Length: 90
Image 1 (tube, rainbow, N blue to C red):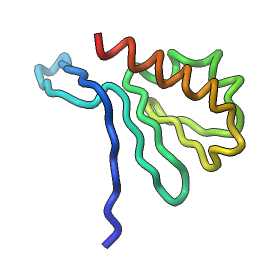
Image 2: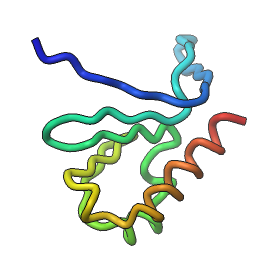
Image 3: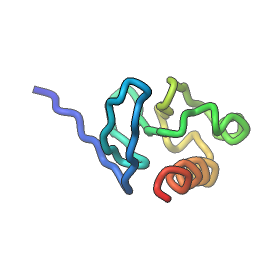
Image 4: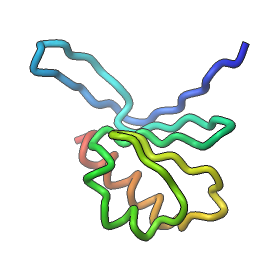
């Protein structure tokens, strides 16, 4: 059986309008065969300008998918992850 590995850092407490709440990692990633998934809980829309400079990637609402880390600007990626982490871990 294929089991996903998720790695997270920091802590983020969320609360939805429905009243549901919980804790999650402030930033995390999952190395998967099709692409490395990077979870950006502040949403990918918060990083539009940086994403335009990142290199080949795709996105979901809160996920950034990178197929080949060698093809992206790692400095830009580090900045995106750091900014997202700083917003949510304070």
